[in-house]
Length: 281
Ligand code: WA2
Image (cartoon, rainbow, N blue to C red; front, side, top):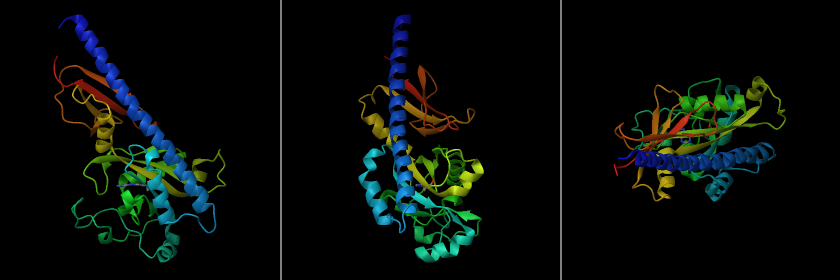
Protein backbone atom coordinates (compact mmCIF):
# COMPACT_ATOMS: atom_id res chain seq x y z
CA UNK A 1 0.00 0.00 0.00
CA UNK A 2 1.28 3.47 -0.76
CA UNK A 3 1.97 5.84 2.07
CA UNK A 4 -0.92 8.02 0.93
CA UNK A 5 -3.45 5.22 0.93
CA UNK A 6 -2.41 4.22 4.45
CA UNK A 7 -2.76 7.80 5.64
CA UNK A 8 -6.23 8.08 4.12
CA UNK A 9 -7.33 4.80 5.69
CA UNK A 10 -6.06 5.99 9.06
CA UNK A 11 -8.06 9.19 8.73
CA UNK A 12 -11.23 7.36 7.66
CA UNK A 13 -10.94 5.00 10.63
CA UNK A 14 -10.39 7.91 13.03
CA UNK A 15 -13.42 9.79 11.70
CA UNK A 16 -15.70 6.75 11.88
CA UNK A 17 -14.52 5.92 15.39
CA UNK A 18 -14.87 9.49 16.68
CA UNK A 19 -18.37 9.71 15.22
CA UNK A 20 -19.48 6.51 16.95
CA UNK A 21 -17.86 7.44 20.25
CA UNK A 22 -19.56 10.85 20.09
CA UNK A 23 -22.95 9.26 19.37
CA UNK A 24 -22.61 6.91 22.31
CA UNK A 25 -21.49 9.72 24.59
CA UNK A 26 -24.34 12.04 23.49
CA UNK A 27 -27.04 9.37 23.92
CA UNK A 28 -25.67 8.52 27.34
CA UNK A 29 -25.67 12.21 28.29
CA UNK A 30 -29.28 12.65 27.16
CA UNK A 31 -30.45 9.72 29.25
CA UNK A 32 -28.36 10.87 32.23
CA UNK A 33 -30.18 14.22 32.19
CA UNK A 34 -33.54 12.47 32.22
CA UNK A 35 -32.52 10.18 35.07
CA UNK A 36 -31.52 13.34 36.97
CA UNK A 37 -34.96 14.82 36.25
CA UNK A 38 -36.58 11.62 37.59
CA UNK A 39 -34.69 12.09 40.85
CA UNK A 40 -36.21 15.59 41.10
CA UNK A 41 -39.65 14.17 40.26
CA UNK A 42 -39.40 11.71 43.18
CA UNK A 43 -38.17 14.47 45.48
CA UNK A 44 -41.08 16.75 44.48
CA UNK A 45 -43.99 14.32 44.32
CA UNK A 46 -43.01 11.54 46.73
CA UNK A 47 -41.02 13.22 49.53
CA UNK A 48 -42.42 16.71 48.92
CA UNK A 49 -46.10 15.83 49.26
CA UNK A 50 -48.13 14.42 52.12
CA UNK A 51 -49.58 12.02 51.25
CA UNK A 52 -47.12 11.09 48.50
CA UNK A 53 -48.41 11.49 44.93
CA UNK A 54 -46.30 8.53 43.73
CA UNK A 55 -46.82 4.82 44.29
CA UNK A 56 -45.37 1.83 42.41
CA UNK A 57 -48.19 1.90 39.84
CA UNK A 58 -47.70 5.61 39.07
CA UNK A 59 -43.91 5.26 38.93
CA UNK A 60 -44.10 2.23 36.63
CA UNK A 61 -46.52 3.96 34.28
CA UNK A 62 -44.62 7.26 34.17
CA UNK A 63 -41.21 5.66 33.63
CA UNK A 64 -42.57 3.33 30.91
CA UNK A 65 -44.21 6.23 29.05
CA UNK A 66 -41.04 8.33 29.23
CA UNK A 67 -38.62 5.47 28.44
CA UNK A 68 -37.97 7.02 24.99
CA UNK A 69 -36.27 9.89 26.83
CA UNK A 70 -33.62 7.55 28.26
CA UNK A 71 -31.80 5.89 25.38
CA UNK A 72 -29.47 2.99 26.30
CA UNK A 73 -31.13 2.36 29.69
CA UNK A 74 -32.77 -0.97 30.43
CA UNK A 75 -34.69 0.31 33.44
CA UNK A 76 -34.90 2.81 36.29
CA UNK A 77 -35.71 2.29 39.97
CA UNK A 78 -35.88 4.17 43.25
CA UNK A 79 -34.35 2.86 46.48
CA UNK A 80 -35.23 4.43 49.84
CA UNK A 81 -32.71 5.21 52.58
CA UNK A 82 -33.83 3.19 55.62
CA UNK A 83 -31.87 3.32 58.90
CA UNK A 84 -31.85 0.16 61.02
CA UNK A 85 -33.98 1.92 63.65
CA UNK A 86 -36.65 2.47 60.96
CA UNK A 87 -36.54 -1.05 59.51
CA UNK A 88 -39.33 -2.68 61.48
CA UNK A 89 -41.80 0.09 60.77
CA UNK A 90 -40.76 0.18 57.10
CA UNK A 91 -41.26 -3.57 56.65
CA UNK A 92 -44.63 -3.49 58.42
CA UNK A 93 -45.80 -0.59 56.27
CA UNK A 94 -44.80 -2.27 52.99
CA UNK A 95 -45.75 -5.80 53.97
CA UNK A 96 -42.43 -7.31 52.91
CA UNK A 97 -38.95 -7.80 54.35
CA UNK A 98 -35.85 -6.06 53.00
CA UNK A 99 -34.00 -8.69 50.93
CA UNK A 100 -30.29 -9.06 50.37
CA UNK A 101 -28.90 -9.16 46.87
CA UNK A 102 -26.71 -12.24 47.12
CA UNK A 103 -28.42 -15.21 45.59
CA UNK A 104 -28.67 -18.38 47.64
CA UNK A 105 -28.87 -21.70 45.79
CA UNK A 106 -29.84 -20.00 42.59
CA UNK A 107 -28.15 -20.07 39.25
CA UNK A 108 -27.77 -16.41 38.36
CA UNK A 109 -30.19 -16.06 35.48
CA UNK A 110 -32.63 -18.89 34.85
CA UNK A 111 -33.84 -19.55 38.37
CA UNK A 112 -33.73 -15.98 39.61
CA UNK A 113 -36.78 -15.66 41.81
CA UNK A 114 -36.92 -12.67 44.18
CA UNK A 115 -39.16 -14.56 46.63
CA UNK A 116 -36.29 -16.98 47.22
CA UNK A 117 -33.95 -14.24 48.39
CA UNK A 118 -32.91 -14.17 52.00
CA UNK A 119 -34.07 -11.35 54.21
CA UNK A 120 -31.23 -8.89 54.77
CA UNK A 121 -29.05 -9.41 57.87
CA UNK A 122 -28.81 -6.50 60.31
CA UNK A 123 -26.98 -3.46 58.91
CA UNK A 124 -26.65 0.19 60.01
CA UNK A 125 -28.77 1.21 57.06
CA UNK A 126 -30.40 -0.20 53.93
CA UNK A 127 -31.48 0.95 50.47
CA UNK A 128 -34.48 -1.22 49.51
CA UNK A 129 -36.01 -0.58 46.08
CA UNK A 130 -39.59 0.68 46.51
CA UNK A 131 -40.40 1.83 42.94
CA UNK A 132 -39.28 0.42 39.60
CA UNK A 133 -39.91 0.50 35.90
CA UNK A 134 -41.59 -2.79 34.92
CA UNK A 135 -38.42 -3.90 33.07
CA UNK A 136 -36.50 -4.16 36.38
CA UNK A 137 -39.37 -5.07 38.74
CA UNK A 138 -37.28 -8.03 39.98
CA UNK A 139 -35.18 -5.66 42.13
CA UNK A 140 -38.14 -4.40 44.21
CA UNK A 141 -37.53 -5.01 47.95
CA UNK A 142 -33.82 -5.77 47.43
CA UNK A 143 -31.36 -3.77 49.54
CA UNK A 144 -29.12 -2.11 46.95
CA UNK A 145 -26.48 -1.54 49.63
CA UNK A 146 -26.00 -5.31 49.82
CA UNK A 147 -24.35 -5.41 46.38
CA UNK A 148 -20.75 -4.20 46.17
CA UNK A 149 -21.06 -2.05 43.02
CA UNK A 150 -24.49 -0.65 43.89
CA UNK A 151 -23.36 0.16 47.43
CA UNK A 152 -20.24 2.04 46.29
CA UNK A 153 -22.36 3.98 43.81
CA UNK A 154 -24.93 4.97 46.45
CA UNK A 155 -22.22 6.16 48.86
CA UNK A 156 -20.46 8.17 46.17
CA UNK A 157 -23.71 9.61 44.75
CA UNK A 158 -24.95 10.95 48.08
CA UNK A 159 -21.57 12.33 49.16
CA UNK A 160 -21.07 14.16 45.85
CA UNK A 161 -24.56 15.20 44.77
CA UNK A 162 -23.56 14.23 41.21
CA UNK A 163 -24.55 11.40 38.91
CA UNK A 164 -22.10 8.52 39.41
CA UNK A 165 -21.37 5.37 37.45
CA UNK A 166 -20.34 1.85 38.55
CA UNK A 167 -17.63 -0.26 36.96
CA UNK A 168 -19.07 -2.82 34.56
CA UNK A 169 -20.59 -5.79 36.43
CA UNK A 170 -23.12 -8.54 35.77
CA UNK A 171 -26.56 -7.10 36.44
CA UNK A 172 -29.26 -9.21 38.09
CA UNK A 173 -31.27 -11.27 35.60
CA UNK A 174 -28.90 -10.40 32.78
CA UNK A 175 -26.22 -12.37 30.97
CA UNK A 176 -24.28 -9.25 30.06
CA UNK A 177 -22.03 -6.75 31.74
CA UNK A 178 -23.81 -3.53 32.53
CA UNK A 179 -23.35 -0.34 34.49
CA UNK A 180 -25.59 1.52 36.95
CA UNK A 181 -25.98 5.31 37.10
CA UNK A 182 -27.11 6.74 40.46
CA UNK A 183 -28.38 10.15 41.63
CA UNK A 184 -29.09 10.79 45.31
CA UNK A 185 -32.43 12.34 46.28
CA UNK A 186 -32.12 14.85 49.15
CA UNK A 187 -34.69 16.45 51.40
CA UNK A 188 -35.53 19.87 50.10
CA UNK A 189 -33.80 21.92 52.82
CA UNK A 190 -30.30 20.94 51.61
CA UNK A 191 -28.33 24.14 50.87
CA UNK A 192 -26.37 24.16 47.59
CA UNK A 193 -23.20 24.77 49.61
CA UNK A 194 -23.75 21.67 51.78
CA UNK A 195 -20.78 19.72 53.11
CA UNK A 196 -20.34 15.99 52.50
CA UNK A 197 -21.63 15.21 56.02
CA UNK A 198 -24.74 17.33 55.46
CA UNK A 199 -25.34 15.58 52.12
CA UNK A 200 -25.11 12.11 53.66
CA UNK A 201 -27.50 13.21 56.42
CA UNK A 202 -29.98 14.85 53.99
CA UNK A 203 -30.11 11.90 51.58
CA UNK A 204 -33.60 10.36 51.37
CA UNK A 205 -33.05 7.82 48.62
CA UNK A 206 -31.32 6.90 45.38
CA UNK A 207 -32.61 7.00 41.84
CA UNK A 208 -30.74 4.58 39.60
CA UNK A 209 -30.72 3.52 35.98
CA UNK A 210 -29.22 0.31 34.63
CA UNK A 211 -27.50 0.08 31.27
CA UNK A 212 -27.17 -3.30 29.56
CA UNK A 213 -24.17 -2.13 27.58
CA UNK A 214 -23.71 -4.87 24.92
CA UNK A 215 -27.30 -4.93 23.69
CA UNK A 216 -27.64 -1.17 23.81
CA UNK A 217 -24.38 -0.36 22.02
CA UNK A 218 -25.29 -3.01 19.46
CA UNK A 219 -28.60 -1.26 18.83
CA UNK A 220 -26.86 2.09 18.51
CA UNK A 221 -24.23 0.87 16.04
CA UNK A 222 -26.89 -0.96 14.06
CA UNK A 223 -28.44 2.38 13.16
CA UNK A 224 -25.24 3.17 11.23
CA UNK A 225 -24.79 0.98 8.19
CA UNK A 226 -21.12 0.42 8.96
CA UNK A 227 -21.03 -2.92 10.69
CA UNK A 228 -19.50 -4.52 7.60
CA UNK A 229 -16.65 -1.99 7.68
CA UNK A 230 -15.35 -1.65 11.22
CA UNK A 231 -15.13 -3.61 14.46
CA UNK A 232 -15.91 -1.64 17.61
CA UNK A 233 -14.94 -2.42 21.20
CA UNK A 234 -15.83 -0.34 24.25
CA UNK A 235 -13.67 -0.55 27.38
CA UNK A 236 -13.78 0.77 30.92
CA UNK A 237 -10.15 1.92 31.22
CA UNK A 238 -10.46 3.45 34.70
CA UNK A 239 -7.70 1.06 35.77
CA UNK A 240 -5.31 1.55 32.85
CA UNK A 241 -3.46 -1.69 33.53
CA UNK A 242 -6.65 -3.78 33.66
CA UNK A 243 -9.19 -2.52 31.10
CA UNK A 244 -12.63 -4.16 31.23
CA UNK A 245 -14.29 -4.92 27.92
CA UNK A 246 -17.90 -3.75 27.96
CA UNK A 247 -18.75 -4.36 24.32
CA UNK A 248 -17.46 -6.07 21.20
CA UNK A 249 -15.92 -9.28 19.94
CA UNK A 250 -12.48 -10.64 20.78
CA UNK A 251 -10.20 -9.34 18.08
CA UNK A 252 -6.57 -10.03 17.29
CA UNK A 253 -4.41 -7.15 18.46
CA UNK A 254 -2.96 -6.50 15.01
CA UNK A 255 -3.31 -3.98 12.23
CA UNK A 256 -4.55 -0.44 12.24
CA UNK A 257 -6.52 0.69 15.29
CA UNK A 258 -7.98 4.01 16.41
CA UNK A 259 -8.88 4.89 20.01
CA UNK A 260 -11.60 7.47 20.72
CA UNK A 261 -12.38 8.66 24.23
CA UNK A 262 -15.94 8.33 25.52
CA UNK A 263 -16.89 10.68 28.36
CA UNK A 264 -19.84 9.38 30.42
CA UNK A 265 -19.75 12.38 32.76
CA UNK A 266 -18.30 10.70 35.86
CA UNK A 267 -14.77 12.09 36.36
CA UNK A 268 -13.81 8.97 38.36
CA UNK A 269 -14.35 6.66 35.37
CA UNK A 270 -12.59 6.42 32.00
CA UNK A 271 -13.96 4.82 28.86
CA UNK A 272 -12.54 4.23 25.39
CA UNK A 273 -13.83 3.04 22.05
CA UNK A 274 -11.34 0.98 20.00
CA UNK A 275 -12.02 0.70 16.26
CA UNK A 276 -10.46 -1.50 13.57
CA UNK A 277 -11.19 -2.21 9.93
CA UNK A 278 -12.76 -5.63 9.47
CA UNK A 279 -10.47 -6.71 6.64
CA UNK A 280 -7.55 -5.49 4.63
CA UNK A 281 -8.54 -3.58 1.47
N1 WA2 B 1 -30.68 -2.05 38.71
C1 WA2 B 1 -30.98 -3.09 37.87
N2 WA2 B 1 -30.33 -4.26 37.85
C2 WA2 B 1 -29.33 -4.41 38.75
C3 WA2 B 1 -28.98 -3.39 39.64
C4 WA2 B 1 -29.68 -2.19 39.61
N3 WA2 B 1 -29.38 -1.17 40.46
N4 WA2 B 1 -27.94 -3.87 40.40
C5 WA2 B 1 -27.69 -5.14 39.97
N5 WA2 B 1 -28.51 -5.48 38.97
C6 WA2 B 1 -31.98 1.72 42.48
O1 WA2 B 1 -28.62 3.20 42.73
C7 WA2 B 1 -29.92 2.89 43.09
C8 WA2 B 1 -30.16 0.02 40.58
C9 WA2 B 1 -29.76 0.77 41.82
C10 WA2 B 1 -30.58 2.03 42.05
